[in-house]
Amino acid sequence: MLEQSDSYKTIYEKLSEQNKAIKDRSNKEAKTKIILESTELTKAQVVAVSCIAAFAGFDFVKTSTGFVPGGSATLEDVTTMKRVVGLIPGSSTSVKASGGIRDWTACRKMIEAGATRIGASAGVAIMKEIQEGKVKDEENQGAKESAGGY
Image (cartoon, rainbow, N blue to C red; front, side, top):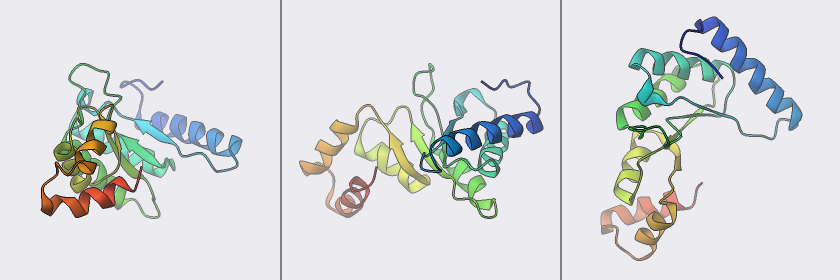
């Protein structure tokens, strides 16, 4: 576990070591993610840890577990995380939004902000919205394309 008092160098070293160990044990097959609990961090910390995670080779940076009070994903955090990981040369790190995503509208907004994966306990309800045609016609194409992913 990382502490906010750790230096950025220490955080990078710990994350890089953990990521490498996971990748080595799985013959490079495992997808790795780092959960930020972004609502507990300042914007500068979200930027720094997203950058560090991308340099350390993580496959995903995730907004939150969804279990911290007030720990819902925000569009601002998803946008920030996406911009940061996109600036790292050679990085393939993506963003996973999680926490507070309870319907297709919220899901779509997170995807538009840059999330490539969604963590939602309401995933079944979101899929029913799409399948039952409760999504507006102009959203149907995006809903069907997004539903084919993870």
